[in-house]
Length: 100
Image 1 (cartoon, rainbow, N blue to C red):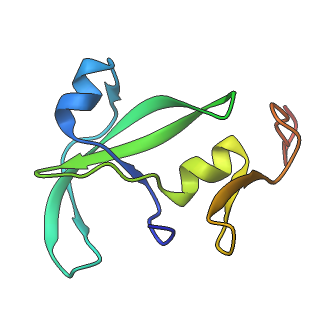
Image 2: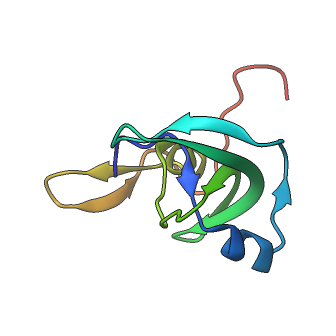
């Protein structure tokens, strides 16, 4: 789902990997129009040899989904023609917009 903002994982998966819960419950609207109670977690994602911190959300009956914020944190984008992920910057390079 290239339109999703956040990565979504089931709560059981997040607990198994030791993800840190970072918010109290809040409501989100899903693409199908449903409004569900969700919780946000801090996780480290590893993809194609690059690791980055990101926010992951979970809610009842959540299905695995990688959101655009996670892809941007890793530095990859989806090529819709080839249906493959490609890097948007050198692997492991972090660009800072403010003083680091």
